[in-house]
Image 1 (spheres, rainbow, N blue to C red):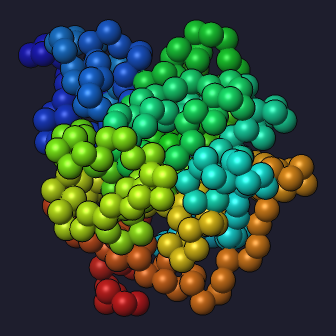
Image 2: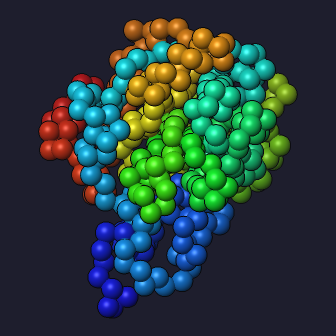
Amino acid sequence: MENCELEYGAAARLKEGVLDPDLCSGCGACVGFCPYIKSYNERVAIIHSCQICEGVCYRICPRGFTQYKSLRREVFGTVDFEPVLGVHKEIYFARAGEEEMRSRGQYGGVVSALSAFALKDGFVDSILMTGGNLKGAKPMLVSSASGVAECAGSKYTAAPTLSLYQEAVKKGYQKIGVVGRPCQVTASRKMQQTREINGQRISLVIGLFCMEAFSPDFYALMKEKGLENFEHMDIPKDVHFRSSGEDTIIPFDEMRQFIRNACLSCYDPLSELADVSVGSTEYDPGWNALIIRTIKGAGLVEQACDNGYIEIKPYPSELLPLLKRAVYRKKKRVIGRVDFTHLNLPASEREYFLSMGDDD
């Protein structure tokens, strides 16, 4: 690499700035375009020295240097920005219209319902999702409602879902959807700007709420405690494993050691750059929180409601300050970290969080 200047996009920069300091989120965006980058057991590595300076691997990495203000402008245009929750049009409680989809999905099953409807109505012709089970998550490229059903339920680890994007392109899909964690949402928006990889084919982005993801070492703990055959996992406060009426609870403090290091420097727990963001309400396990962010997201939700795929109701006004407080505290912690250098935030935004107390 001595004769290769570390330009924006070099594999050397990805290695030195993201992989070596353990800041990789495992999104999979850099995997699939380059024969020198591989993912195994939810870890990404450069397996051979790459002499190409102008590659896209660092450019599309969510932990690579990101002009966040410019990226927001690309997604939303010129709009007023809300520093805590991000740009949004509406916030609802929502759930899938069909009981079967609710029972298979996490909480209200909204991600599965919106994904199935997006395929049926032509918003997308394929979707990158996370399948597998609690024994091991895996990326999946789906193009049918049955494929969506296979991916129902949260996995809480870091499957490299975006690693299958190039496969989707090679198969000729023109309108590719993404369901992913906030880091994958950011990577998807950076990919949309990268014509070398046909990133403009990303047509819809459904983002998940995510405070943290567990490292692959988490699977060893599950095996040790005999939890591999449980069907559902949830983290209301502690970590719950459920199957056929059985409920095993592990204190979250016992799980804290498995949080990926990259998650500790994540500024975006609500997938702010998505078309819609979906997560737990933390107050009603039968419903999801649903944040509509873009015009495309609003159209998807409206049509999904009209066709009975989801139902919505107002987000309780008394709960909104609690959501804002949780996100505010997360962002404030991250901004204060010495390794938080990948997002170029406006100075006014940094000041907003650093100048206020924890309960503001």
